[in-house]
Image 1 (cartoon, rainbow, N blue to C red):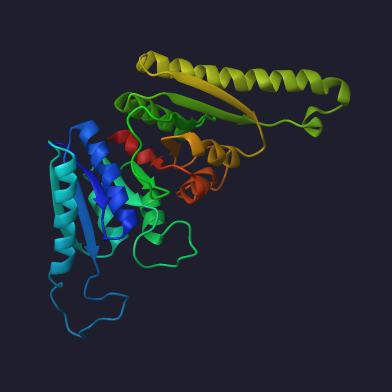
Image 2: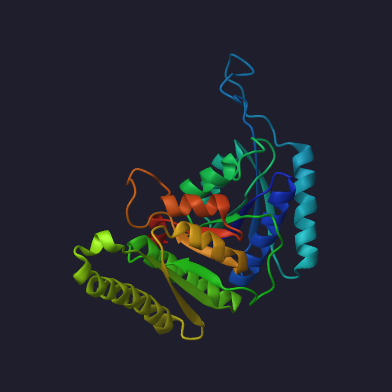
Length: 295
């Protein structure tokens, strides 16, 4: 069985654009595309429609028409793509997280129907990014997939296990897309970190050398496994990496991030950098998780 790419579709423009990104990903991987629509179960918001046990309501006929139309459009524009549709009795986030257990990638739009218009990322997108059992692609903003080879794939490097996982995934994705990688590492040192003024220059030199070594090691790892992928390095002197990554994403086709890097609170499913990117990046964001390592 070939694990499919899964896309959540609710009929909103953002979800249909996400389905287009998912279709491109499925074609690159030569796997089927599953369009999944979660419809609310009988208990909806915790208040049962019937006080006695009832069967789950049947799939929504209008939703099926929407799914069929989306599938037909994707098949027509991408010959050879296998597209399947299904409705799941449940909320959108739960349906996609459940589907991700047997998927190679799950794709969701940054906003679908419902929710609060002021939020940059809808609740379904946020939950899928945090809880998916496979890599999760959040398509933001809702723009069509870029042509193959247009724009680099960006990945942040910080020496953590999560960043190493993201780097490996980004390298494979760059090979599939026939594009390059941009490795970004943020380092920081100010005079207070260097102790007395006379020793600051040496401390700064050593810190920069360590940062350069980290980037060099990451680039070497990519060249060893994917020598055909062009690699560029970018060293940034900044206290926080997230703002620079958000700005760099303006010219990127994709940014790949681990669910957690260094620092932060271990109880959080998404680290601060991941949170910042899925809410503010100017290109799609792919989140990898520790559980992806066993796939």
